[in-house]
Amino acid sequence: MPAMFLQLKRLKMLFAFSQFLLKLSNLKNNNYYLIMYGEQSYLIENLLSDEMCLDIFTKAKDGIKWSKMYNRGSEVPRLVAIQYEKNTYSDIPIYRHPVDEQPDGEEFNELTLMIKNEIEKKLGQKFNHCLIQYYENGSANIGEHSDKTLDIEFGTNIVNYSIGATRTFILKDKDKIKEKQRIKLPHNSLFVMDWDTNRKWLHAIHPDNRPECEKTDDELDYDGSRISYTFRTISTFITKDNKLYGKGAKVKTKEELNKSIDDTSRDDTSDDSLDMLKAFSKENHESNFDYNLYKNGFDSLNLKTINI
Image (cartoon, rainbow, N blue to C red; front, top):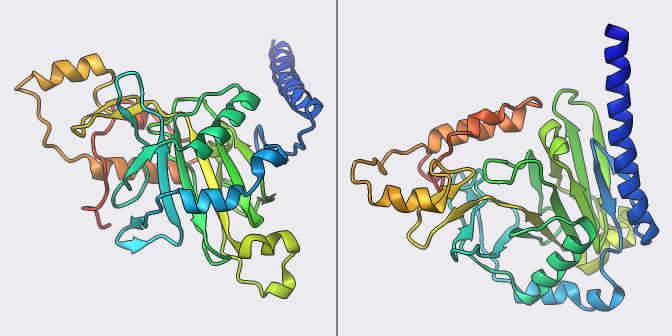
């Protein structure tokens, strides 16, 4: 019996792997360069056509409303912007992660929408939220972390589109801290990170303070600056009066939210930001993170009041 069980398990794994190879084959047949990393994550180079990429870096840099972002009172070493697509209720998708305060966002501009549409055509996944980050030089970086899945639609990919100078993306196994993968993210490339990679691996872009003489031409392009577009499929939404509903909130649907607003016995004053931060920390450290910690949802928007 154990032998039969193992054989069935192997067959299931082989079938799943064959389906993934078929997906990669379809992409390769469209002349995209792919390399497999971690679980089922991969890199697509030359995502957009030359015509689409014409002056794309300048258009992005000049056409985005950049903001500073703070975590525990300290400014993060990059500028950020948030763009999104409203849902049918005209409510805004929200992605919560460890920052003091969510920057103001705006609807997708023309350039971001073009990039999003091309990615959706390639992957067959819809995205409604984008965190855009400007790495001004080699010192600009982002620390090791897992994306927080509280508000992300379960099982979906997280994708990162790069323009500008090439930077190195680091994947580090949560359980085997010495096991790392280094992925070069060149101009006009898309890194597709699947759900399991985010669960089992940390990712980061470390500072690159090497002298220019040690860097390659593509690392020096655009004066060493890089812009990244991280697209996600978000299932939590915020109303114009700052009420939350959806996957990561305590109230799961718009209908329930409307009923709860009329419920005078409902307590809206409780602060669950500390519990949310503790859950975020667990997701950052545990490769077998229990998603049930997010099941009941949280209503806090920001972590500015926490200092632990």
